[in-house]
Image 1 (spheres, rainbow, N blue to C red):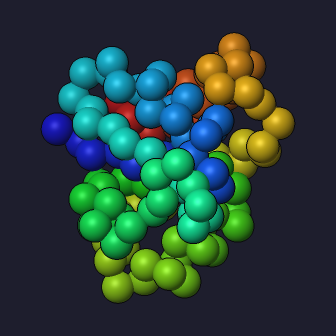
Image 2 (cartoon, rainbow, N blue to C red; image 1 turned 180 degrees about the vertical axis):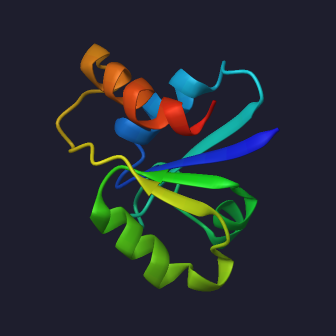
Image 3 (tube, helix red, strand yellow; image 1 turned 120 degrees about the vertical axis):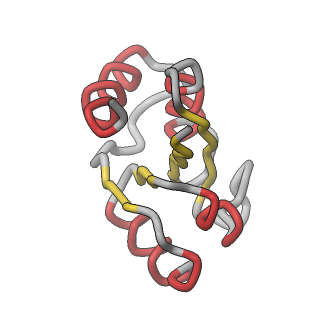
Length: 106
């Protein structure tokens, strides 16, 4: 079972959408978190250590992840370059997530 973590800023739109989209994929255990301290589910060292692969939505998320959780970070980090322009479960966001993250998860 591959453990996959999706990270955005607030954990309200992009990463929860990704978590829901990929939750049904076989062989994956998924979770999501936000880099901001007031995120719905704030990113923790425990979550970073748990993950086999971490998808961040923007380069700023990768930077925050590397700075704050360097000692916990063992997973591969992939930036999806998806801006904060989408609502939760937006069909366009779902298409982007499948196209950009999907190939790394098969």
